[in-house]
Image (cartoon, rainbow, N blue to C red; front, side, top):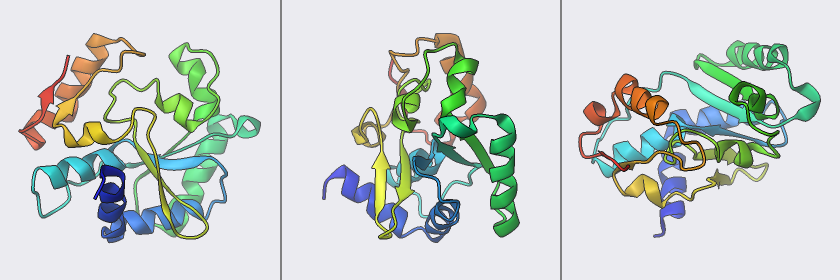
Length: 181
């Protein structure tokens, strides 16, 4: 089984993740995915042989809609999600995030993810209308199987990278990981 098929299988076998994907899909967004720890943590748990999933601090729903690029629109979507589920949602329209990051405007969620601080974090999953899981990964997903945490060469911020590795305790939670600098 190739790595993409493996990731899809793991997600499909995780009731919480399937429920979160279904709830997110109910918003009717056109370019969206659940990203960051949603896929990354699952993969790291599995390659470490953990039988229980590591708890998520939140579920990052990212989407791209230039017509609704306001923080208020994100808050409205978060409220709608929280009204139908108990998950801790974090919603961010990537059509506005370039301003915060001092980048040129992004063209899509995949383009926005290609600027994230770690390569392994830039992986997301979406659920299409046929209930098929689709993976969004500007750097591919093989890195999730390599036991690495890799700074994104497109976003060279070594201090931010080091701070995230420490604050998120990735090396403690998944001790076989190595920082790949």
